[in-house]
Image 1 (cartoon, protein in one colour):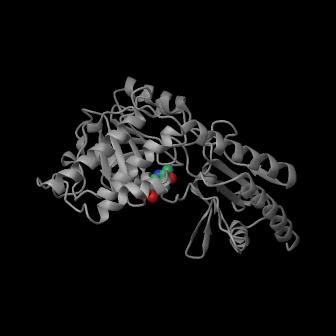
Image 2: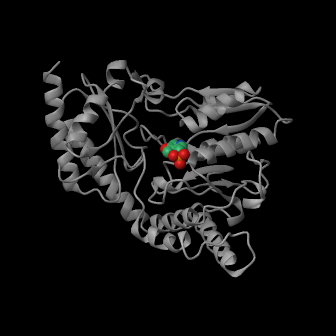
Image 3: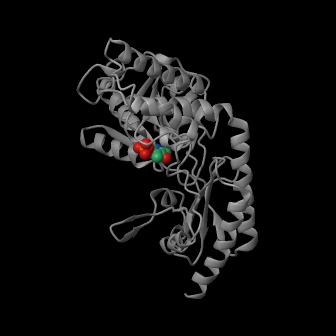
Length: 382
Ligand SMILES: *Cc1c(COP(=O)(O)O)cnc(C)c1O
């Protein structure tokens, strides 16, 4: 195996060279604490604020509405718990969907144990929530709607603008997990009436271990981690300065190259999907064909065991992902694929291929050829 071909950008991405270059001095020479008042501290503060401005610019926010966190999961926790605890006297009802990331689902489950009531909206066969149903579920006690911008497994893009309008009309806060969406679609928090938005650096070529949360001015939310007064007293802990610098640089770069990048991903994705559908029988595309992230594909191969397929691909240097998480040896079908009503035999053989910057058409041809051969082999053994 001479070359690794990476098609799992929805899981994580590598740090770009330009990003790493800007971060490097802040691991070493420039080690000051941004809260210190001497010059090397102030220099760090300046870089953190520059990153905050870059993030704000990318999503149409104000810098003071951006809070840096440790990851996308923390941003989701802070958004949902932060709003829930701060608005408890107003109500205890939260609306989310069945296909959210575990960072949202498990936060909601934890809140249920603390006396909050959570409605988990159903989705249709392509993964869309129903706006009509959303509005029907709203009660006097509803304080928060949390619906992801785009799904991490099947790439479906939810009707965010319409959800924002409904939330605003009912005076309910709207949080969206945009961890998959940032860099892959244009997001404007004012136009889309978003009150809180989560993102994570390592999904768009910044390092792991740094995230951000946008919280609209005047939204009533509270910190969930006790400690110092960092991040305007909403997120205690000395800032991850190199990580924050990297996140700021990466989001600026990706928006500078937005059209080219998205065009590249879309072309690879559409080519891959059409070739697979042409060359391999008994396949099914999961998620919507049109309203999906440009870099996401999720295809079920009937009569195939996903884990087995991944191992065969790995032997050829190909990295991809299944729709199902393998927990301690038992094959749990993915909650997303179950929610869209996919029959077991399709859910088992789901393969998520997510494209990124370094992928070329040549790589995709290699992937398609390998898949055609491997699927034939695996099916013939049954
Ligand atoms: C990856 C991901 C997260 C978690 O982000 P981390 O930075 O890995 O904690 C949350 N939501 C979605 C949709 C994701 O894809």
